Length: 251
Length: 265
Ligand SMILES: Nc1ncnc2c1ncn2[C@@H]1O[C@H](COP(=O)(O)OP(=O)(O)OP(=O)(O)O)[C@@H](O)[C@H]1O
Ligand SMILES: [Mg+2]
Image (cartoon, rainbow over all chains, first blue to last red; front, side):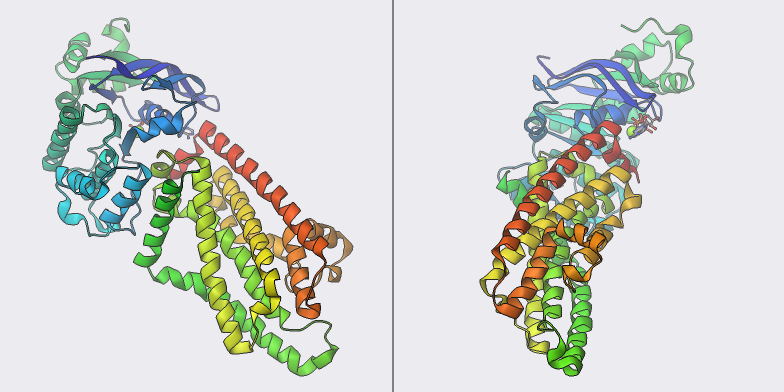
């Protein structure tokens, strides 16, 4: 593993007097898939939105591809992409039309071929001429992912990409994500409430709780650090506020 | 400004209209209703007042057509934003490599297209139904249209800025904003028909000079050049002020997380 693609230092986000993100620092190295875990409201989506320039940090610094996000937002966004449960592609347009628009926004070369490639990768090639708004929840999640992969992003932010997928499709999505990392060397930040996802996909995991980072390490390290049987047990304990009893100091 | 990006954003809009032709109804229905109402009022007044009326009464029809240019341009800008809110696509656009200038440029193009479509159709219909030829405005038509387009864009940016700031509850501003100014805009009556306080407002709006100018041209075949210059000058001020407002509201939105709140609606 080599240079860091994303570096976040002392990130703070306050909404009024509520701190949603508190002194978060971490980095992701090239080709790494980092899982961002934590209970509802832990601040995961807020961190991701700050990386996309949708929310301005109250304090701290975000550096992507060695450049400061605040001053190089557009250049950086061109080389990254995201997929989130909180967004959809316009429901009135056909699947192919939506991908065509976003492909042009990201200036994807040889766009027609690329559209077919990403649709095939997520096994929804047959939906290209369908109206996006008529897709099932799982199909539209995969369409979102297609949009996120169009420009072969060097950094991919995935906010709960497997929410609403059945186990079979969730498995296919995990495989697709890993394939993208292998073939394109993409670096990823991945949030999920599905611990199976995280164990299978992520090289390293960060646990957030009430806006702070509690612990980071490989899934196995985290499990042994908290002296639990599985990541899921760790999650439940952290979410219920029991982390402080046995957890070692955060490194 | 990047033309490729603008092209892509406008393409999305064209897809929307070709995919859902029922939207064309919205584009045509209201202007058509206005044209019929004001058109037949004109016919009625022509029949009963004859020469007693100080203007060519047909100016009412010209007013409908020119007002629609302003209104459509404003709508193009304001609905552009709302369209993404409604389809939960807002964050996809704002997290894509699209600068504020690209974004605004695309809204202008959509405003221009909307205005172009309806005013062309209204122009033809008014000729067929009421023998009113908008080309009677001669070459003045060009600066008239440009000024109304620009003012419509400025109003559209102001509406959008207010919607971003106050959230979806303020959505009706997208339709209401032009009508806030309509009473002062001298569309269907001259500025000096207004009480003095309202006249002051009127004189601060670029479009009042255009509607006054239209009546002058229909009556005398010419207009005071000063009015065109004033309208254009005011327009530059409005467009710049609206741009500053839009950019500062976007900054506030990023600080307060307003864009992501829209997505959560
Ligand atoms: N725009 C905003 N204004 C005010 N508070 C906000 C805003 N966005 C997020 N918050 C608050 O910040 C906290 C963190 O929210 P965030 O969405 O980042 O959590 P999350 O970890 O993604 O949770 P989930 O697992 O439910 O998606 C929450 O308490 C939320 O209410
Ligand atoms: Mg979230």
